[in-house]
Length: 381
Ligand code: GLA
Image (cartoon, rainbow, N blue to C red; front, side, top):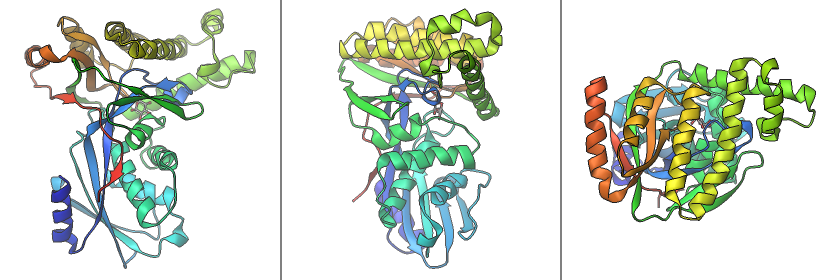
């Protein structure tokens, strides 16, 4: 892939490029907790988005994506959001480069193998790869966290998704063989080895990507905020769902809009599950860890209501395979992938079996990926 993109850049723009790679992510548990100042447990995966960049002298951004046979040109004098994926590049330029530092333009090639719309965070990977390269070319001296935060701002203001920080953080901070426990309240994090030679992580793609997913996502976020603002009036020390105790939420159940209540309940429980699951991970107890994954899915489906018939079907089907220890829908929701924890020996049989069941029920074949936990974003030599 790296050689190919270098060659494509030469062919298309007639010069050498700086190549960067940034991976997609999985999240083992802790969903919709990041924008509630909670914890998440993501890891970078062995699938990347690559960008190749070289400066030009005509103050334009020229983008080429061989995979889609697409090319775009944007003037850099007035950078603003656009329809389609180039908006992510424009957003990163907008948030990272003060205009006085932009005397030149840029030629960019984009490529990669992170599936789009599958809940593996291809857009965060794109922002991270591009941000890392801009940091290098323009000598911005930014930390990885600053690049991640610019990626999050890009999602908010250039793609209209009020996401948390998990995806950008994971893409930029991933380490081979390690998951990351991130406290989204203060952005402190620790690496936890995921060293289970007998197990693997299998993603099963529902092949569904919901057209209204981003508006439903934003709605969930505002429902959580509504819960916080109600509770804050009663308990001034509460500023986020992280500050809320289960007794406090329960005590006011009847006064809170029932949808808002369910959303808050899920977030409180999910945070609790995450903390317990880290203990199980450290103790090597994947069976108990897997049970919490199933519980997480139930909450996502019943209380947070971000699942769909296809994800529910896959999780229920996964339960019937003895080699599967846990399964749940991953990421923002309304389709995308389910993440499963599977005994390596039985992984092929599981993939074959679940594919058949899904085909029979929905008439389409789900892509299945055995994921490796890999290195975060990096520049290629
Ligand atoms: C998407 C968002 C993340 C996070 C997850 C749900 O992936 O980008 O910030 O909120 O959904 O956990």
